[in-house]
Length: 188
Image (cartoon, rainbow, N blue to C red; front, side):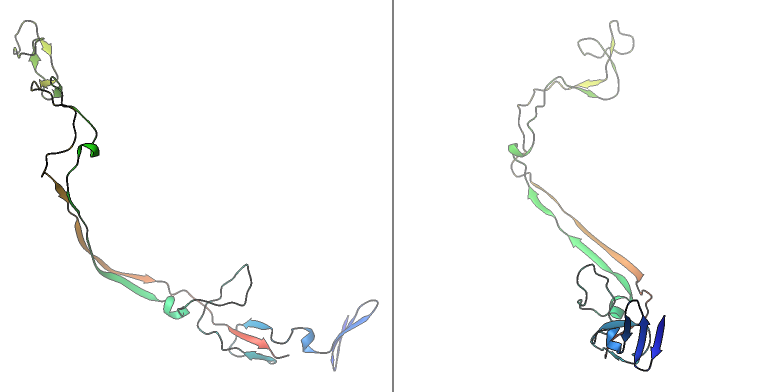
């Protein structure tokens, strides 16, 4: 059981009696505390070092501060809008033999087109020919090219790019609800 005395509080503990005869026994002098009220309670002094800032919870050492923008200027509503322009193009580019895979354009390649009826030698005989076979297209009979890559000199080309647009005004509201607290230090 505890007893309130003129100088403090007396606690009846066994085997001794403990007493708190000073407020300093509860909080050390200069202890900082956050209060949700307009002014400092008796025995405390309101600190004005920090103003218009958010509270940040940390797992490391407390008592620090940082940032450059005030809470209300950062956490306000604003509008995004304006015009967007981008222009970037690759210049004239000519591919060399080493830049494209080697390839051949052979003769006798059957290319897909409209089906026709052909003799085995490839000649078209019409629909009433004797020995006919159904083909899948026509045949390229010009001479084959050698294995090569690249394009003729002076045939460079460019890939131009440009874009414009307008970002219509979009409201962004990050005005977070908050409560105002004060920091006070214990007078002791």
